[in-house]
Length: 198
Image (cartoon, rainbow, N blue to C red; front, side, top):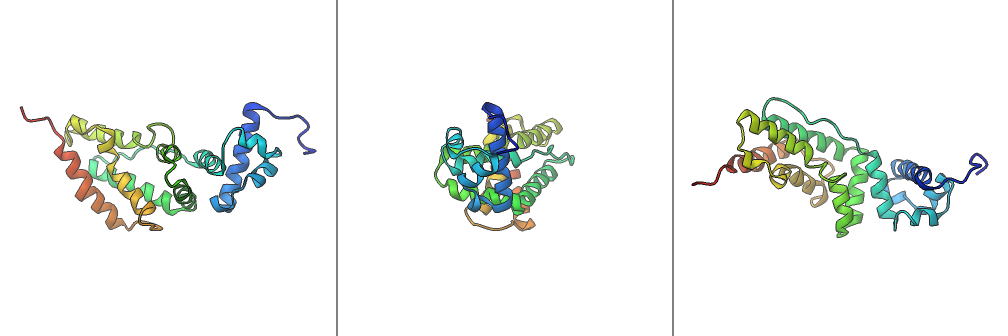
């Protein structure tokens, strides 16, 4: 504490706690994340953490969200190519050490729906955004009808991939599974959504 002569409050303290939690999460995974370690690393006490995050899982989710980065959606010139590349990006992320942390958090969240929503969405509709972008491009190219531009339709492929990790517990999904998701489920679903017959 000698290097911290002024008492931090508000955003400065919250940032220090999150930074400490990120460091703990990357070094030890969710299993090694404890309020004691985060408090010690942040130079504060556990009460300061509990006032902001009610439990270890909520803190872990907040720390993970600091780690997660967004990448621009691919633009291969075709919906199939874009969808496959988005799935491949997600597969690489979820197969990485950062993905292992995400899988730990999903497992720990179990039925905690509000935390699952934070993990899945990252920030509101951020998870749907790249899928809606590539679908919007497909509509503009004439590959899909405007009726396909629905968040549940747009994100069905990524939900199916997430199930491979969360439900089946795979450490990585083989590329043929990604191709199958796109060719057998995603593209047929998108192509079926058109104007209602008059």
